[in-house]
Every structure is written in C-alpha cells, then in structure tokens.
Image (cartoon, rainbow, N blue to C red):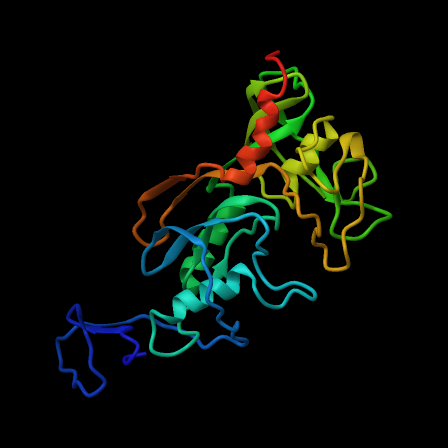
Length: 285
C-alpha cells in the first residue's frame, strides 16, 4: 500500500524505506485485495467527474453494467477496471463499486465508487432516498396529465422469467415504489416526460409508465396495462438492436468524503434524440 501511494506522513506521500518518528502523523488508506478481480479491458466510456474516491460516468445504451449470466466480458465494469488499474502500481488496488445500475439499453449518469467506504456510504444514501435521480423518457400515446405521482408497488412478475417486474395485483413480493412524472412536450402519438425517482425498484419507470398505459417507446418487454411483448433471454438481457427511449439525465448526491452536494446533468445521446424525431412527425397536441 505504501508503494501504491496510499500512505502519507505529515501529509506527504511516504516512501517504503522511510522511517517514522514520534509526533509524526501517519495516514494510510486501506485497500483490501478483492476476492475476484475483473479482467481489465480497454475501451471508451464517458467520464463526467472523477476524484480519488468516486467517478460519475455517462453510460451509452447497449453496454451492460456488470457481468451477468453468459455475459462475462465487455461490460462497463471491465472497462472501468482497466481505467482504475492505470492509477495504481498493482491491479485491483482500486475497484469499480457499482452503486446503482442502469438497464443495458438505458443510457445516462451512474456513480461508481472506487473504494469500500465510499461505496458503503453512497449505497446507504441511495437506499435512504437521499440521492436525487431524474430521467427523460419518450412514451407512447398522449399523456393527459401535466404531472402525477405514481405509487404502484412493484414486484416480480408471476408466471414468467424472474427478471421481469410487475405493478399488477399478482406481483410477487411487491415493494413500495414512487415515481413523479412531469410532461415536457406532447404530440398526438408520443409524449416527452421527465421522471423523478423516490425509490429504486428494478425497471421502475418502465413498469410504472406501462402500467398506466404509456410504455416507453422502444421497450422490448413492457406493453400497456401489464402486457408483456416478449420474454427476455436466459440472461435477462435484451437482444434487440433498438434501444428504448430512456435516459438518466440528472444525478445529485452528497459526496461521502468531502460532504459537498454534487449535481450533474447529461444531454441525451443521438440515438435517444433519433427516437425523439417522432415528436416532430405529427402535429402538436
């Protein structure tokens, strides 16, 4: 850890051969070797913010957050691990701690911890609802209300593969879920909305919007009023080349070390904006 630059004496980086004396202040940043190292893989991903404790990244659609099922390489975690390994003298001294993930076909902002304590604090803030997240979505149909809070509980869908969720009465192990929906622009067949999450249930926005009759444009699985359009593959991932029009556009949280509030915004990428061309295909409502 000293060789990796994780030890300081009187606020200066320590040397492995350096002696310490009475009255000096020694600070060591603990780094545990992980049980399983992700193989680092070079690749590009958007870094919005980075410091010694965490990163905020802008994930493109189509990139899986971490290894799952048969997908054991080429994930965001593998790319981040390569980036972190360039900052230390030994592989795995820093690790990518995924605090919250985005679906494969959802783009936008994610916070990634680089060490254990940061991961723990941010995870607790996330579970307590202290992290602010907002999304832009293009949904099917004319949404009649200006804003609405959807509070339908979400659980696992019965009778299908376990990765699908449901807000229906037959959902298994339902948990409270709360989404605020704000209409930004209407057309005759599609509506652009902003969604603010107060809970973090799996597929929350997609399930809530589908349940009230306005599925996210391009959603492969969730249709209106509980309809399932297709079943996922064995690993739970979509194989459709078309993304759904959902983008994590806003992220805000208190830094676990500096204790300052950090706030970030992300502009939707061209593939999302391409879907938004549907807004201009019809006349304004």
